[in-house]
Amino acid sequence: MAKLLRLANIMKSYFITKVTKQDVLKGIDIEFDRGEMVALVGESGCGKSTLINILGGLDSEYTGSIIVKGKFIRDFTESEMDDYRKKRVGLIFQNYNLINHMTVLENVEVAMQMSDIDPKVRKKRAMDLLKMAGLNQYAKKLPTQLSGGQQQRVAIARALANNPSIILADEPTGALDKDSAEIIMTILKKIVESGKLVILVTHSHLVAEQCSRIVEIDDGKIVSDETKFVIKVKGEYEKVIMPKPIKTKDIAKLSYRNVKQKLSRNLFVSIGMSIGIAAIVLILALGMGLKTYVKEVYADNLSSRQITVTTQDQTSISDSQLSSILDLEGVDSIIYSGVITDSTFTYDATDKSITNLSEFDNEFYPDLLYGNYPVQSGTILINLKFASLISEDSVIAAVGQTIDVNYNGYTYTYTISGIYDDLSENSGSTNAYLASGDLNHLFQSEALTNVIYVQLSDVTYINTVIDDINALRLHTYQANNEAQEIITYIELGTNVLSGVGFISMVVAAIMIFVVLYVSVAERTKEIGILRAIGAQKKDIRKMFMFEAGILGIAGGLIGITFTLLISIATNVITSISLQTQLISYHLTYYFIGIIISLSVSVLAGIAPSMKASELDPVEALRYE
Image (cartoon, rainbow, N blue to C red; front, top):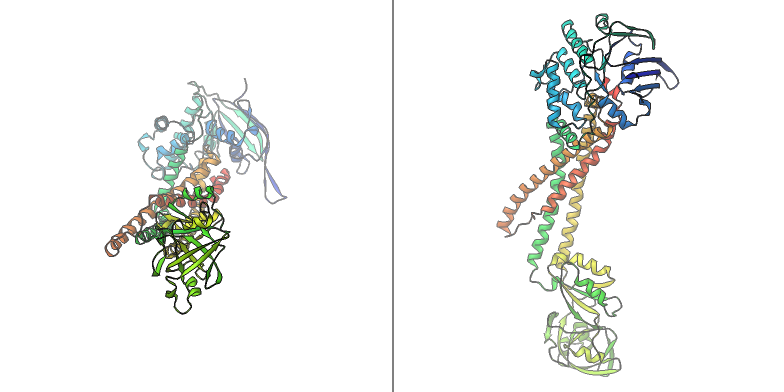
């Protein structure tokens, strides 16, 4: 029957320089099986601990073959090697390698937590293991509150958590007194009696003599292999627990615990992030509030909410363009009109061109200076430029005069009813309005729709509607653009101040980046422990990414709280002084603020999380 563990020609070297190497293991060939308690002995530096690290799956830089239950470890993928450390081997270290901010119970549970075992199951099993080690009464204590011997028993309980078939112990009694050492050896013998393989490294002759087999290594080679006695297996070997990958929620819990460990520092970082979030959200909310205020002020001003739209060449506006304009957000209605651009007028036998000849509409009319609007057929309303061509001395004298309008081979006589204040961009040209319906006579057909007046629901849509209409390759003009200018300045100020807020976000992101890098250095050994008990690289990455995310969410929530407090105080003041609330309570902005905070924090956490996941487990465990 095949042995549980077989090593064939294992060789390991360390490079001192790029070209100089030191051979540590020089061809190890040996087999082990269940029910054995094997002592690896030899002088310091002979390769005992190196061999334990290789058997434990912590060191893969070697040559030769290791076969566990007929499977070559060399063929394992990275994920399979992580599972090997979870399911097949349990590691016990001389310096215990417990996680000091976790309770005794949690230190045992963490190995099963890495394996996604049901919380109720892992808690019961952890308590059973602590009871076996005689420590169940210390379950809620921290490792630092226990003696060295008690801590080592916790480490043994953790090593047994996933019920591995192989237990590897590196100097498990080296730092203990005689009584504690005897307790540890008794526990290890019971483990062997349950049908497991225990391999331990020791310098102690007394410890080695209690083992059923002693293997001596010298200068990287096995020089003796002696079986002293056989340990009787008293119980059936338990089936190995077959764990699944760790759940995301369990990684999140570990991350939350880690953030709480350095609460004051992490709170400081989150507050730094919150300042940027509060600034951005406040600026956006203030911009929205100011736009609303402008909308209220200009609500009754028709001309401020109206946009004149024409084609570039004065041809008809197409039905598809009209339909697109009607579908735009903020468009309330459209007044259809037409403009003739190639007519002339005759006065005192002199012919002169009319730049724009439009039809007067009672829903939209310019400011009257003299006379009356053209409400009767046969009347015409002209601008100041037009009037100056008729009466140079006094433009008012033009009112009541008659002129002939010529178009398309036809001539019509009109009486000037009044003069208006032309504020259009063509105010230096001759512009005029005919009475409603008279433009059709000039066309001798249905009037051409080459001018429309777009009525907005409120002034806050001015810029976006103008941009959308321009995108349709139409020409826009607004007679009263005071509201538009105010909104443009508000938007410009909002963008500039938001940029300042984003700069503070960048500074906060750098703080998170630095803090997480420091955290990686502080928790290097903890990372090594987690990797040794089966945590995958992606688990370590997730843990640090979650920590970054927690800092980001905390910063976002604190920032939103600041925003609400400032908004409430400001709005109380402006409600009294201006009868309006200048800062908008916009839930979307609050949500956006939290998302931005989370996103920036997660981005800042990518590099530290990658560094943490790439730490070498062996080097990490040696880190002090």
